[in-house]
Image 1 (cartoon, rainbow, N blue to C red):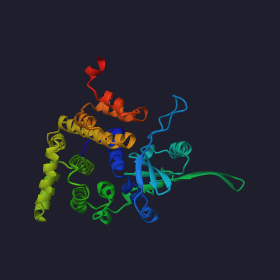
Image 2 (image 1 turned 45 degrees about the horizontal axis):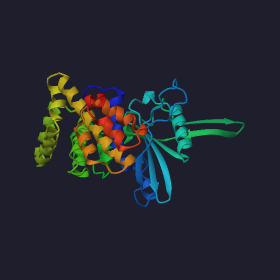
Image 3 (image 1 turned 45 degrees about the vertical axis):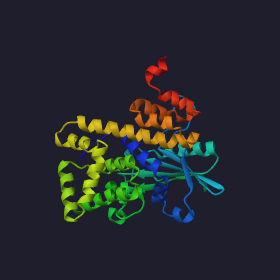
Image 4 (image 1 turned 60 degrees about the vertical axis):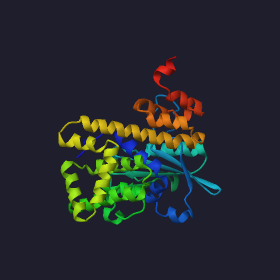
Length: 334
């Protein structure tokens, strides 16, 4: 199994796949949306957190508010990932939804993904309400997605990339792990355009990380594909991972019991995720991206500054400020 990462790592992993596949994330949680909307709405991520009333307020950070524009109407979906179900607070979620509804003057539909929670969990509150003398004064609920309650076999051929990526968290028997792993890997190869090499390698890294494959399991999967006469799939995945410098990182960290390879691979993965988010979010905010800025982002390797730029995105108002931020530190000192 992979080392348990801090919550921030899981948040970044899940936030990335949701921001890059918002419609799939919404329709997996709420399948009836496919029939409600006759065509896919235009979706863009908006704020990540509300402005604090006081600096002493707790950090009410939730994952992804998405603005869905459909013909002459607009909807706001708030998608949160809750890796640790015991830390989930329905009251914090209710406050955040209220802030968003006031800020954007429209209804907000909250969705919470629980990778390790279950609908049977008594400690996860599904709704909160207050009544007095037969009158209801308050009621709040949300759309919960309990991945452990989903049967993996039902999603092995899904055309929803979110469903395929989340197969590691679903319910399946020990005897089915190879088939479920294969369904997730083939989902990435089939549903992600081959021209999007970084995204493909990143999603394969996501799948392998949460299936917790070690060297031995990886070899078993290779033998499994050979018996199916699909060895080229295994070879393709290996090639993609090696091209991005990923395979050696997660294999070395397990095979030799050292953390250097793993940490280096995770660090590079976080940098790539940050670059991808910048390449996607900046054009949504400022329009077409200048080629020089795109080049600098693709070459940028300072994780701290990437994360700072992402967190300050709403404070930046033009491409010139982005360009200034991307300049080497020595240039900014002159």
